[in-house]
Length: 163
Image 1 (cartoon, one colour):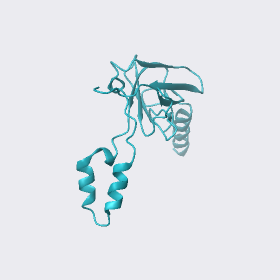
Image 2 (cartoon, helix red, strand yellow; image 1 turned 30 degrees about the vertical axis):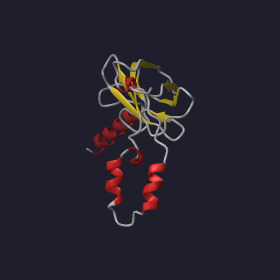
Image 3 (cartoon, helix red, strand yellow; image 1 turned 90 degrees about the vertical axis):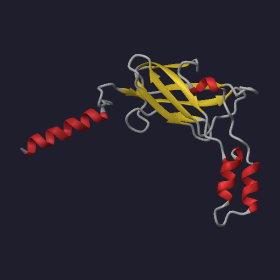
Image 4 (tube, helix red, strand yellow; image 1 turned 60 degrees about the vertical axis):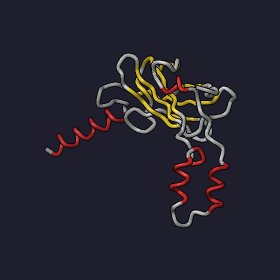
């Protein structure tokens, strides 16, 4: 009985370490960087992959340098093999971009007028064109290959006036 238990545990960990997943699709590491068309990194953005063959998704978040790594099942495991459509979502607006939010924050004890002025003067995060928020319109694709280092560098356009 104990032997069966140990074999079951061994099989589970062997499957987990070999890149197997609940669906049976193996993931391959994917990392990359998102920059705006002027070279500015897109910080705190979200990158989403959708497999064109299986409609499975992977997700990653950009750091201050615009760098990300994709996750499907476990942190940083990557994405499944094959062609993927990509969506890039900018970070949410900061309080400086939202007068109602600033008004709400100003009601908290300990928040000074200086704090509020500082929030208002912070630069807004870079906004990207709306087309990148939809798999149908983004025009971004990437093919994940069976290798240990897939690099997906993306350049996205800033939102144009009136968009």
